[in-house]
Length: 251
Length: 278
Image 1 (cartoon, one colour):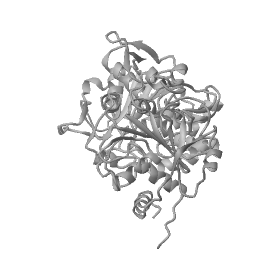
Image 2 (cartoon, rainbow over the protein chains, first blue to last red):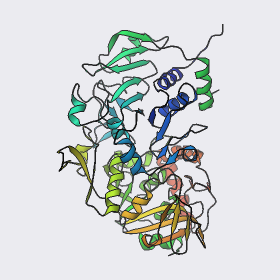
Image 3 (cartoon, each protein chain N blue to C red):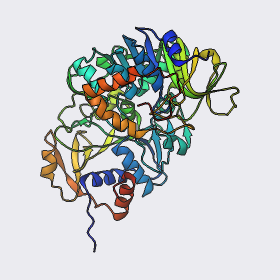
Image 4 (spheres, rainbow over the protein chains, first blue to last red):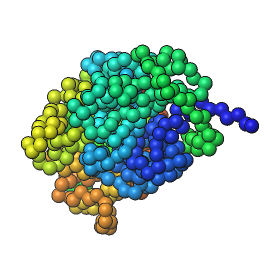
């Protein structure tokens, strides 16, 4: 039997890819979400309908785009629409099953910050900003977040709410008029978190092979609760790893 | 109608103007941005959904007093360091910012193009953007009472876009990822379009975006004028140039040296080969 080895980033990406189901319409952010979505499309979800906010609907790129508007996305898409159309006609009415996002900071209620670290008017770090994320988080039927885990990124309260997760707890999304279910999974290099059905607080529901719960809790900026039904992430298959490495050029 | 780029920028863009150089990854009017830097324009309110490296360069060169935007980054690479430096350290000049989401910005242009005072969207609810931007307000639907977001129309003094082709009457063909260019052009007082080529006759191709000459103030032929972004059907995105910008933009001295090289160059009215302009 051969031993398959992989990196923390690789199991994170593969686990995120497995969150996507065939035929889903997926609003894809660039970077890790795009990598994971493209792995999914090449493995178990060949009919994944990928939408990039540049207006390419149903893109099937033969390599990973560096940017959300690379020519390969337009060349291979079912159709290319304007930016108002992608947001007003496709995202806003709830036609997209899943939004796939990254973030700089996330908090215990899965609120997302991609705007500033520190004070808005005197920031420690100025980040790129909102882009399409606020409406993706508001209007997709559900949201999957993929990001590396550390106490800097997983904070008790985000410095700035760019995109609403579960607000301050139960009932907030409904009160704010947000139509989608919000973040249903947060996938990191250590494990998987999901909102508790009642409190809406993120709870550790899965850990990757070789990771113990104490290490995940240590990398989290709040007192992370662990599910009684904690599962161990299945190891990446050789096929998943081969596809991922071919995409990222690390084969 | 067909005017060299330096002349077009001199006539159409003035200190203090609100200027949108739009392009959503594709067809970014980089050469026009460089001409604005060369002409030393100041106190501009720069507008764009996705300010990327040419806005980083304009900000670093001190052309902008304010930026209205929804995502400021080097796509696929990281942050804009001249933008960061201006926001956090006021270098070389302070930069006021007005920050939206993509949906908010897109709808501001749609309202501008539609001749309406504001646009309405379901968005922004619960975000901290609302508290930091007086141009995001809440409005009740007059029919259902539903709370929605309202944003004011955006009507730039001048919008600059890059396109593939135009004819001598200023009719413009633009295809591929069309972004927000059409709305930004229709919302503006004056419109400058830089193009890969001016042709005698435009072959009509169904489905292409055409800006009729009557809404275009000037066309400047600038082959390669979108590089290092791309012009569908002409040349590809120079991803290496975007990566290379990270090191230049990160360092004030490296940026200053870059800026001196740019402003020392002759005006870009002479054709530039694709992929050359960083």
